[in-house]
Amino acid sequence: MDLYVFATPYRVTWDYYFLGREHTLEIKEWESKAEYDYVKHNGVSIFLMPSGTIGTLRALWDVFPLFTNTGWGENANLAFLKKHMGATFEERPKPWVSELNPDDIQSGDFLVLSKIRGRWGGFETLEKWVTGAYAGHTAVCLRDSEGKLWVGESGHENEE
Image 1 (tube, one colour):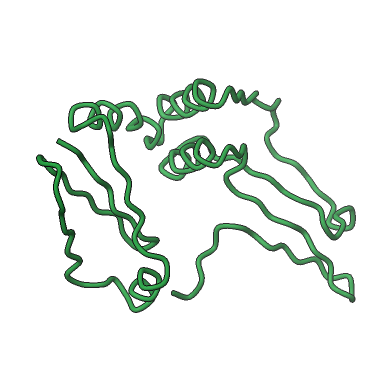
Image 2 (cartoon, rainbow, N blue to C red):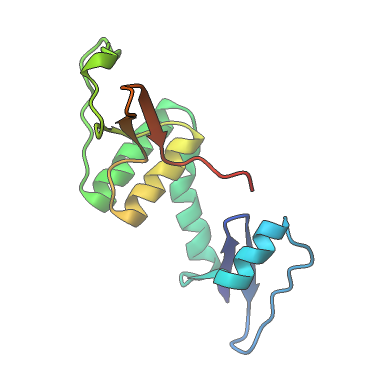
């Protein structure tokens, strides 16, 4: 039995097939016109879970702790990144607050954050592993012609 995951930026669904032959996945309703337009131009991402049902369930059990907002989840994220990427994160000395003077920030300064705990920590851990990056969230500081400081952040969705 093969398990397939079908994904767009707007949804994730799955289906399983016992026999190797032609199969059809029917999407009965689009989440929005934006999803329809996306699929029309880019298609649907299809992922085969080659381990079958038991192997996939075992793998899901292994990543479940990544999404818990507990010390167990935090340790699971750190262990996952070390095992799969060789990445280590050292705890910074307290206090964990940094006081920055905005006048010291220059146009082009780059800020990098790495969330390790909680639901979004789990997503960021998997994102790091898939992309090979050590950051889950980035921002760049920019100053306009009048010297006003602006911060452009990654990860914000557009109106649709």
